Length: 385
Ligand SMILES: NC(=O)c1ccc[n+]([C@@H]2O[C@H](COP(=O)([O-])OP(=O)(O)OC[C@H]3O[C@@H](n4cnc5c(N)ncnc54)[C@H](O)[C@@H]3O)[C@@H](O)[C@H]2O)c1
Image (cartoon, rainbow, N blue to C red; front, side, top):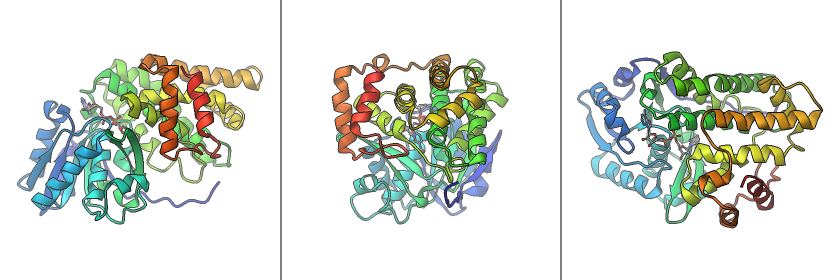
């Protein structure tokens, strides 16, 4: 096992009716900026619950944060904070709203050009405003990690940053808030969480028995409950398991002390920047092709994954790896997610643009060995057309 530091300061308030507990978590004298997205939080009544729980605190609201949140929108919120003397941020929504809020929290305390927060991958962030979250979409684990991904539409860039100053102080996880999600978003959440786990698991063995076992349990849970959670939107236990699995998938625990990949994510971000394909769907395209391309370096873990997640024990090594990749594709299909670039209007002739952007963004040595060069990424995308 590799050396690691593990520290996760986010308090989780899990279960039915927990929005009411905001009152105890947000400082009494806080001037609160509620951040939210395109209106689902208003429509579903979540915002009304939040307003009620905040009582007579001063509250300002900032809506309109897009899926794949935009830099320009986040910058507008920074102005609202300055004009209103805001002291605490409360994100109400999915990963996009929470990611934007992390960026806003950092940018509000940053004296330089906020674009540097992204180009430095967060290293210039020395402080951030405190913020909590009310999660409405189980997928990203942004509610319990320090990462964020922001899109700059004019620059055609979707860039991640991380900072130890950007953990939420608390996150409310009420599975009932997910009942209103369209099937498409639940499927996206299942796929996103699945690939988060894979990025931290499917590399090479380092004798990290607990992390491997925990990751395999999370993967098997998603395989089991993913299709059911789409079929039965108001089954509390399914939604509770999905919500907690998605959080544990990327709150740092399974990634501590193990090598990590993240190439599928970085290549996938460029597909979203290219034509706004849902994040999770880009992952379902890239991952199976990457598994096949990287079957040499990932051999031992691919065999372990096949055996422990899919119960594949028959055949020679390559046949077992083929079966594990097929099972992965079939799983995405079972939750209604297609796995070819052509399913998302990306043609072979577009790959040049995507690889050009990947290179421009410095993503030239991806993967756990730094061996996924733009040429390898091109080969992976060509195999996924
Ligand atoms: N920070 C991280 O660690 C991390 C990890 C993975 C992905 N991401 C990023 O997160 C973003 C995706 O976030 P997401 O998958 O949570 O989706 P999202 O936040 O973009 O939301 C998707 C849609 O669902 C709607 N919605 C949300 N909750 C709802 C509810 N309860 N009922 C009805 N509609 C609802 C939203 O209005 C939106 O239209 C991407 O930009 C991705 O790159 C971040």
